[in-house]
Image 1 (cartoon, rainbow, N blue to C red):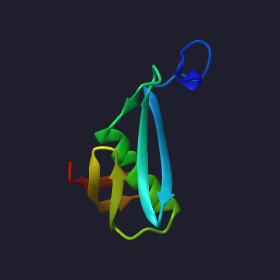
Image 2: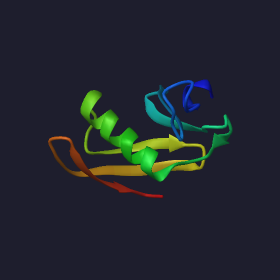
Image 3: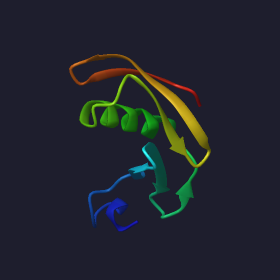
Image 4: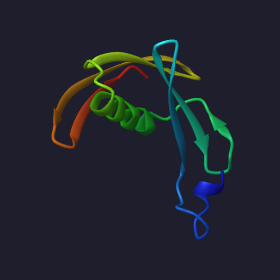
Length: 88
């Protein structure tokens, strides 16, 4: 993935793609070398915070990953700090 290359782009460990499929949230993960990954725990935490704060999502919802559906819950949020419960 060209965006992940250090010294030539922004640099990153990988890319998270968040989409809505048939009304359900889906997270896709691509590693910096372009390989597909089934899941990423820390990435899922970021996706939960993003969806909760920007898409008016309730505290409990499901995120589909390529390793299965994940029940998630925002346990607390104070400003920009979140505590998230994940069913990994």
